[in-house]
Image (cartoon, rainbow, N blue to C red; front, side, top):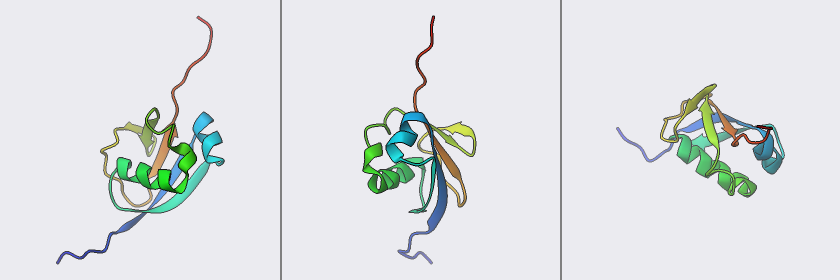
Length: 90
């Protein structure tokens, strides 16, 4: 039997460098509607609009493994948002 209720997943988000500065926190746990990384980022963007300008450039890791944005999420997953790395001398 299919119902219209969406299953909420508890997801832990980790923020690094400029993303952490925009989010004003190192980590955040949210209950989000079930889905994939892209869905979770959309939900996160609604919650923290300051992240909007960063989300198209970040690398994503799910449970410490680099991932694409179509990856399905499960209850308790950790999603890390990692900005591009630059700098240093050549």
